[in-house]
Length: 96
Image (tube, rainbow, N blue to C red; front, side):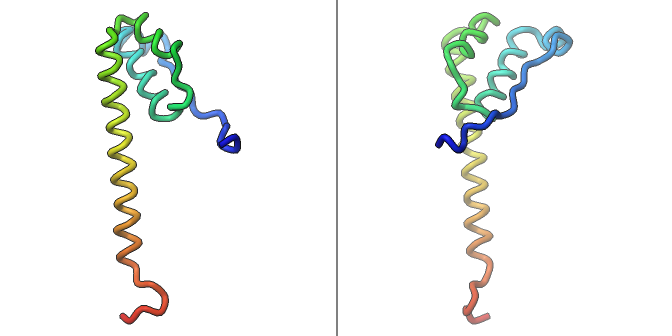
C-alpha cells in the first residue's frame, strides 16, 4: 500500500463560497470531498471541523453514511458495467 501513498486532491471552500453557503453546508461539502477523494485521510480533526461548524454527532454520522453509500453505489455500477461489457465482447476463438 505504500506505493499508493500519493497526495490526493484537497479542497476547502473559500471565504466567498463559505459566506454564500453558510458554515454548516460549506463544512459538509469539504467533508464530502474528503470522504470521496481521500477517505484514508479522515481524522478526528476532520470531524472536529464539522462540530465547529455546528454539526451534531448524529448529523455527522448521517452525512458520512450517505456519502459512503453513494460511493459504494458508484463503484458497484462501475463494476457491473465492466462485467457487462466484458461478457458482451466475444472472446478470441469463440464462434460468432
